[in-house]
Length: 300
Image (cartoon, rainbow, N blue to C red; front, side, top):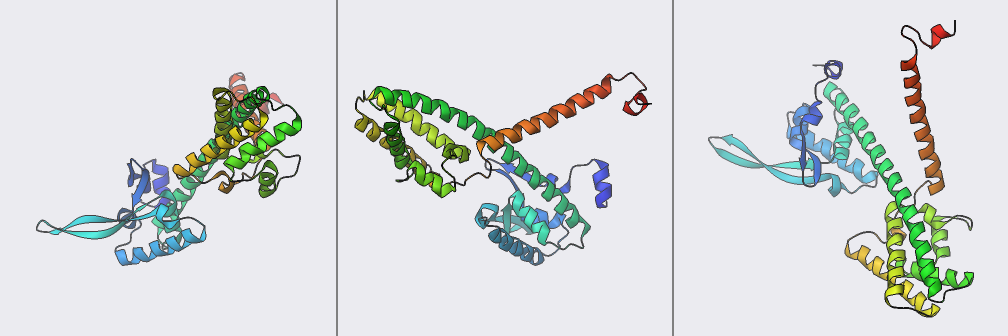
């Protein structure tokens, strides 16, 4: 069956058919992928894998995250078995493999289309999920900061200068000594840009935890002096940082800086929703036209 015949038949993709799913997620067997891509000799396919691993490294990805070497038992006759090399491949690894495979094979062209489309679809899905999480965590952080500053005020943090010093103590605890200005400089922001608007969802969640924890500590410990409030806030930030380290999560100063601010993200989400709504209403309007009529005939 040719690529076009396969696409028009509506049958499941041969690449989807060999996908495996376990407790760690989806993966493909390199041996099975080699068969689908019509590689009779493993040695030839192994060289394709090697080129794909090089491409993976050049794209700043960790090879071991996408190409997991394993072994597979096969029968060689009369009940005997032999252990052979195999790899568990991520979707991205498969994409790199088909990009480096023999382009004269029609099935390779089909694979390039399949993995390119599905990889891009996954990227968009991850982007939308991160956007949703950022917006959610940013709103939470606003509420937590509002409650924290009220608790700090009750503890003796009164003037704008007091609050700036109090805030920096929390950041220093969480960011290994960095102040709000230090964080802004590292992110490439100017004085008018809020550092929280340029945090990813994990960094926002860490700061939300820092603020919520500091508020509870101020209340629970009955803090009444601003110097003690500063110390408590610094301690809360350090506790969150230690929790991230213990969990194997990158510290906040090493997390990536989003390309879009929260304000830009909100505008983009609003634009996307507007387009989707216009599409929906446009379809609905077409359905509501009298039978046998359309926009062209109504203009005559």
